[in-house]
Image (cartoon, rainbow, N blue to C red; front, side):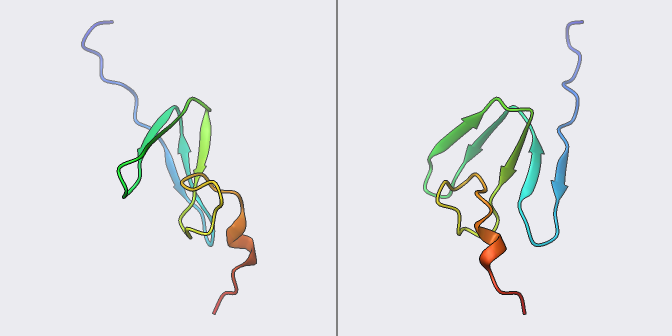
Length: 66
C-alpha cells in the first residue's frame, strides 16, 4: 500500500548489557563510520569494550560492577 508508514523498530534496553535493536539497521558511530546489518536483531555495545564496536561481543560481562 503506497504512503503507508514503516512499522516502528523495537529497541530493548538490557540491564548491564547491550541495546537490542530489531533490524535491519544502519549505525553511524561518533567518528562518522557507517555500519549496516540486515539481521533481524542486533546487539549494540554500550560499554565500548567490544572488539567489534558498535556490535556487542559480550565484553561487558568482564566489567566489575560497583
